[in-house]
Amino acid sequence: MDTERVAAAIQHYLVNPGENAEKVWTGPDWFSVQSPRRVYDAGLADWAVAGKDWVSDAVRVVVERRPVFTTHGLLLPAQGEPLHLNRPEVMAELGRRVGAGLSPLAYAELFGELYSVRDIDGPVV
Image (cartoon, rainbow, N blue to C red; front, side):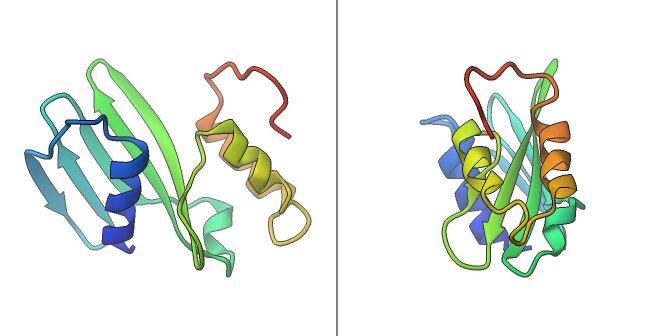
């Protein structure tokens, strides 16, 4: 896992402005960051899309703000900017790859984990 790229994506997409890291823990395939209000646990996800040649890393980030836990998905393409999969417009764009480098089941797997408890206004696919 490219921890520097993942950390930058978490900072960009998930961390609130003004929120600073108090503690950081790292391992070979995971890391955690604690801020005054939240804990961000990031690790490699075993999603089917992770094995695609155009994907460098697929990362599951669990944000803990007790008693609420929120799961976020990040895809780090081999080329290009990280994708925050919890954004409907990003999933809509990713849907264009179905049948062209992304299987329908791999796409559905992402919806199952990241959108199973969320209402979405308007079409995603």
